[in-house]
Image (cartoon, rainbow, N blue to C red; front, side, top):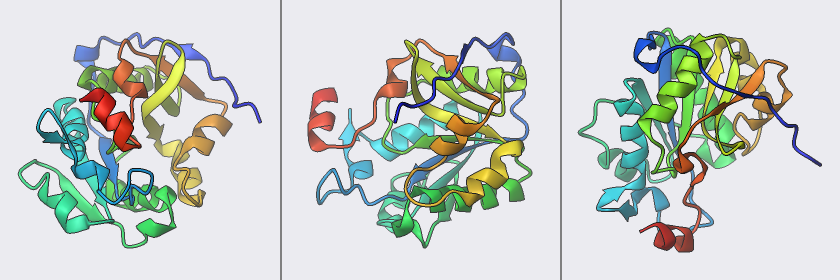
Length: 212
């Protein structure tokens, strides 16, 4: 089945004018890394820094309050970022798929008064903070309630969901996260960024070796 094409937009608000109040960042770091092998990929390193730490720093450097959702090997993953100013949220049902991490993160984010949430997988270590800022700028400029960054017209991560999407996100099941919500809404769009890192995740050891 062909995936629905989303319109590509450019944020009009200057990035420096972005008001981050009400926007919470979430690093999804609870998975088992089954395709990577026996090693937890989030704890492997690029340039001496673990993948989960690099992803977390991306959201912090964009100025967001950050939640990190852990599950598989939670204590070790938490230790990799224990000196960063983030909130650790443990997902005890992580084995049931990424949708459970989305639900746990929404509970924690809304408890903090979040009106929008930016999701970044913990295995995406090369996203620039400026791409996160452009995503938020597009949301605040009214481009949509469900937005994803795109490089050369191709959808990537992170993804932002406004509060109008929260109920639909809570209803998602399995290991697909919020993709179905993004693709099904009439007010979804892609935000153009000049950042190939938004398309680069580390799923296998070969992929990691290629980027080292």
